[in-house]
Image 1 (cartoon, rainbow, N blue to C red):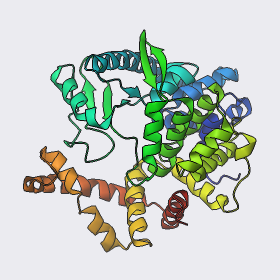
Image 2 (image 1 turned 135 degrees about the vertical axis):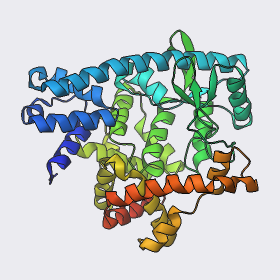
Image 3 (image 1 turned 180 degrees about the horizontal axis):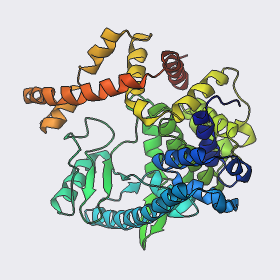
Image 4 (image 1 turned 90 degrees about the vertical axis):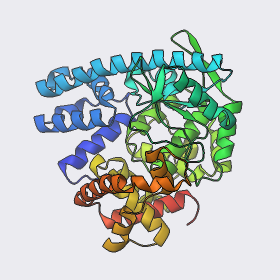
Length: 408
């Protein structure tokens, strides 16, 4: 694999560190200059994998190669990650006990199983929030009970909406721990027809792990792997970054995984292409977990691999623009001109306005929020336009999304 700029090489190194975190990266570290170390550590921390870089450095015995500023940044990240991990551990335990006292048994999604069961140490898997899946008919009751307890409140940055809006309810803040929680009644993408199959699988095959002395239900190994695959591909097109590669490594190595069964489950859920793409992407960066059954690339996979790499390593300042433009291209079938892009930039989703005004989605008062939304959207749009995401790259990403969804 050839790399152009120094930024590309650093991005590729970070992806390899995540895809094969148990490998020896000593030669790579020896080749890094001070600026390269600064870029690697900065990008790793921003992508929530800073401690994986630190772990790789220690495993390679390369501590003396790390410049002082990079070492200080990694040490700061280690302290922050340790405190965050402890807060999430206690917060998860308390939230589960609270909901069970209400007669609701939640399932802690994705990151909880990874951090507290699959990774060697919980702090290696940075959690942004805790996602708790509950039955759809109990979701709003669970949310209201948590708010009324005085222990949790709706996050000040969150909008107001019910289960009609998406797969989760407004984000909550644990006032004692300062962590974020989300009550989910579904899993993710609204246009994924087979989603109910995975939701049912998560509920029916949940397993228990012990977190801070509390039995916490989590998805089975297969259900979690399938959710990781869907989340990284259909929902985010790899813009959640290389942390997905590390998640897959530690989950698969923890096992047990019946790959023949998993591939069949992915096929039934419309995720076989996504699974094969993510496996080949991981393999291209040196992953060791990929089974023989997923090592045979499809003839048309090369362009989709290139698009996935570009999206995964894209600078975060470009995310919103790329997401919006992909949506326009998906609807129109071509790259939109500036007028169409500008029109999309100033056209809100009614439920977003309703959420800002904290009214129902069909309440005319929602339009009172439009001026505020327009200012926020305008700033984000102008910043995104300055990021200049390549149009050809976006067209290929749209092609990849359509291929993943089986429409091409």
